Length: 105
Image (cartoon, rainbow, N blue to C red; front, side, top):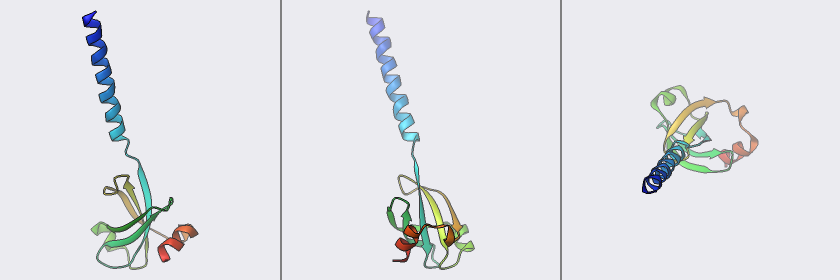
C-alpha cells in the first residue's frame, strides 16, 4: 500500500512538472505595427490589432540600415514584450485604417 501511494505521488509530481514546462514554453506572440520617426533605431508608439500600444522599441541595426524615416515596420514580440521574434519593413497600404489612424495621431 505504501509503495502504491509513493508511485501515485511521483506520477502526480511528474504531471505537475510537465504541465508547468508546457505552460512556460507556450509563450504566444503579438504583432505590432509602427512608423519610423528617427534614425536612432527607436520606434515610438507601436500598435497591435487589439489596440495595445508600446511606446518605445529599439529595432535591430540591420533593419535600421534598410529603412527610412516615415517607413512602416511590423514587429512580432513575445507576450513578455521584451523579446523580438521578428521584424521587417512593410508597405503602408497593407495596414488597416484603424492602425494607420492610431499611428498618425
